[in-house]
Image 1 (tube, helix red, strand yellow):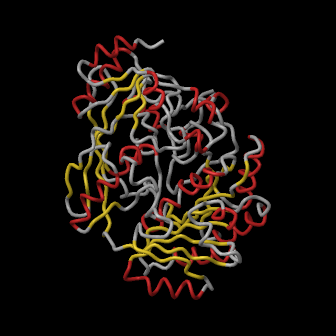
Image 2: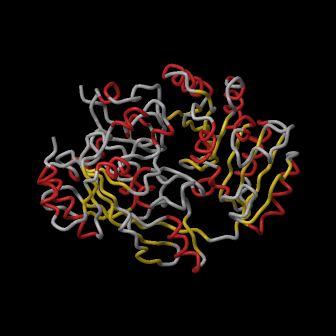
Image 3: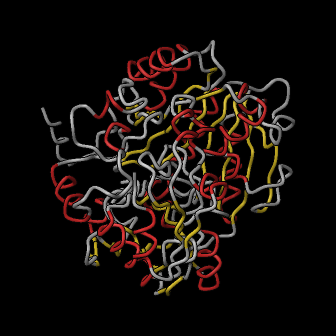
Length: 473
């Protein structure tokens, strides 16, 4: 049992809520919607109290109070994560960081903001100067930058700029340790990846410095093709057409877009492949020539946010694709695989043949560690963990690097390279093991003891990364 009374007393006047209905609601993220493997655990675990720091000084009080009373902490932004990042496996205090929402300043092509700043608000602050964020999730309108850095990995813009882990995509982080006397640590360069995608398990982020990209006048396009693999080949050609400035390249198989209310009427009866794209306005002529070369048909072209589907087109891509499909088909699931060049198209063709009896495939183009990759998998009806594992093994046999998006564990999830330095950093920043307990584990038993942890996943292999630290015997 946690000593909630002692923790609240140590907080002083930091706002806190103990109402069980509110605390239960804030203990949820999108995990239960996206993974039937984690669903029961995601709904079962609830925090003891909700804490709402107002500023950095309050964060220091929360960190100190947690250390002195041994209260677990789970950091929370907008709650849009879907890999279990925000589920309080050990109860404790859910720390709502959304009041720390200031854009602290811009300096040419860089911006510094507090972790609770909405990503849409950051773009609103930087666009008058001709800049915008390089990468954002499909949940841009509600997601916080702290949640994206702490739990995300890629998104809209990754087809041009790569993933958040790639050098230069996070410029700096300010993080606070959870100790009796909390320390503030400034991370820059490669050191930012200690905290990136660590699920808030090794430091409380209090400020973030991100690079910016030129803010273009974006055009949204929906392109359809008679054959799915032609759509894949077109998407590959678009992604490697370096002269065409783009922000989104998303590929959907016919069964998928027909299950999405906002797209099903755009594809036509005779088409199977669909590509969603965002292209800078001056390059639309070149884009349309590429569409013609591959025999595609433009089903829609519109200014950003003005398409017939009534939302920004990126809210039909990335994680939103599954969200829209699950509105009417909640039994449909997917995995996270990376199909990389130089055999990207060939590997996808093998998986398309293997999984043709399922519900189509969905891919997002992104740069990954210096290469072009398509991230995605087949969509299929969940029939149990062994069926899920069978699909994962088939994707790997076809050439994909398969991560595990059905586990709460950072290391076993496979999207973050974890080594001995991560263990040391975790120990230094969180010596009592209070930050999001149960997520960043280094012991051999972790995979067996955590839901979904033993699904067959070799994870992603990064260029130049150290080998993962062996688990404890």
